[in-house]
Amino acid sequence: MEKPKMILMAEEKMAREVTLGVIVTRPLTVWHYLIPGMFIIDFLRRGSALKKYTEHFMFPRKQAVDAAQALAQGQSEADVFERVENDTQAWLSSLDLYSPGLLQKQVNAIKLLADHYGKLLKEEGYSVYALIKAAYQTRENLQGFFDELTAAEAEVDRELVAKMGENEKLKEKILAEQNQLKERREKIIEEVF
Image (cartoon, rainbow, N blue to C red; front, side, top):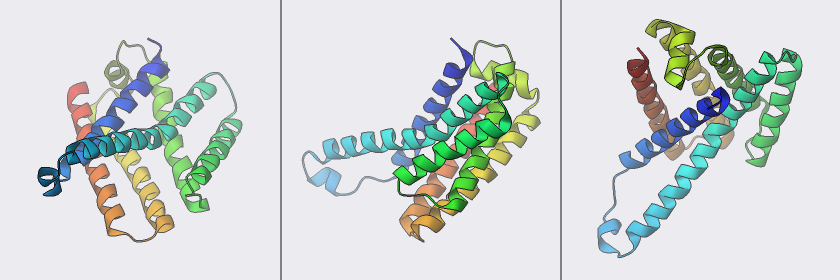
């Protein structure tokens, strides 16, 4: 399998695991037991949430893989990231979430991911974990990247909250997602090293 596809498949798997982890942490209400069919409605709602989160999680990652490939083919960094910025602005606008601050933080996160994917694309291996191990060599190096990425994602989340307004439900959802990402990344480190 070609490396970009393998990388994106691993990221999509992580998106699904994060979403399922967030969904499972929400307790069932009394309505699930009292109203017949509530389980089916909840199942469909959860399936929709899974699809939506995966799409939002994957957009910047697809941008980053494309950027890493373009840079590896010798395209100029300025041209590549101008295209990333334009595409990201159009995406945020389509979600009615555009703000200059959110755009900049999202592009910063994409640049980090593009650098990471660029390292993976240079390595040889038959799995994403093999590529990661070859690129980072030690668990400390990989942890350093994850820490940097987590900080960049937290900046995106702060800008998102600022754009959408202070909302306790949104903050809880973001915190749950951050915790799930942290758990998944710790699991990756354990499995790679």
